[in-house]
Length: 439
Image (cartoon, rainbow, N blue to C red):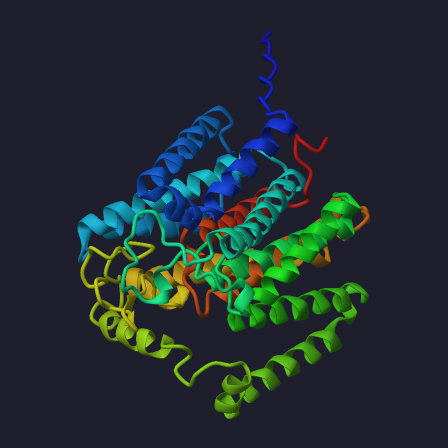
């Protein structure tokens, strides 16, 4: 006769502890520019190391189930790692690979200690803190400092305006840059804060006061940054939300007309963009070269075709001390350290193989996020469960990140990559949203 020993119970992190860690992780991930501008590279590095050490400890103590890990995402990361073997800048690739893995481990740690509702709570808090603090920062600069502010690690003497942390333009009607030191980055963070806060408010998982503060400050930041790119992202998120609502109102076998209308809308939008590109850009306040983006895309493409299959080697965010990035994307005296298109950046760095893996990962998370938003509760354990607004959030976050990735490369670095990985992991791990933390 044999005796079966009971399984060792899994160690769980208390909800408060999980929320605290996840909030701090998101604050650091979304605060990369803030930490670099305010404390220098060493301060940012120290914060990153501290969070990574904590993340590694949590992952070791609460290892994820291997079968729940998204294989395509793992393959993409492995391909990025091995790309150092043929990298045209091995030192840069080594640094980039480490930073990408660190960011991925941080995202993994958040998902192994926190349930989806807890992750949303932490994400919402971190985003609202960044938006409110950025507005307060600009107010202090405008009322107290009364002059442009330079990052602590730079001498901005005779530098173009783009180098400044804050240009002190709040009370002059200019586009504010916030703690991020970049109007477009503050704008996308404000949009994400608006999305998460609106979903939490609909789910009634935050108080009315928190919801009002979050919504008002996010809208104010969007108005003061006046980012055309983020406005387009907001429209895309709104259209996806309408599509989800329309789809949920019909039974699975009667959704053809909804998808047909959606396809016509997309086709019409593409046609307008192609045929009326010039007037449309003028209406949006953009130049014909998309503020220099087309020149950058052309330069990156010209280099990418030299190694089209496996790319130049992974580096994620470009380093200014690594060739060919020292002057690859220079405009008006400022060297930009990205291709301003996440998908072009992935192709340039990892070639068609890497882009295929990345694309398949995107297809997988989009399909799972769509299922979460539309059908997950209807099929859960064969019982129609009450729909939660939190089910919609993965799809909205993915939509925002993917559309934003068309003109910015933040999708593959820092907060963009971490948020993407979190959604990939959660939708792959929790098909019905029931975890040990929720029961």
